[in-house]
Image 1: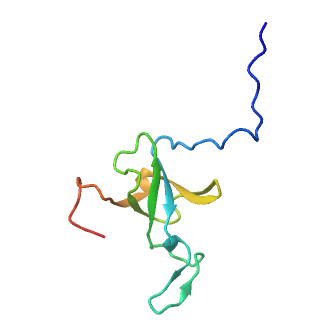
Image 2: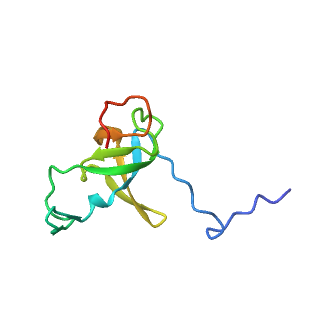
Length: 116
């Protein structure tokens, strides 16, 4: 009888890769999502009430049922819409596709004529 395959120790395993499920987006929020400055230069902390302010983020990965967003796109969303997550020491947000208000893309198809 042969020995079963040896179990790998936790230290020997590389960190697992992340894959989004369903309609989820993994995004890297811009610095604008945190502290920002007013036009006159006053620092506005991230905890300030910004109920109606939307922020941009870069899409890092998309789930298999996402139809209108691709990796590398910039998405506009409400800052309280997503879930914060730390992956390999970096901060990201997980959003649903329905929480995205607009998409800025470098693709040639589907443009409205507005450029950022």
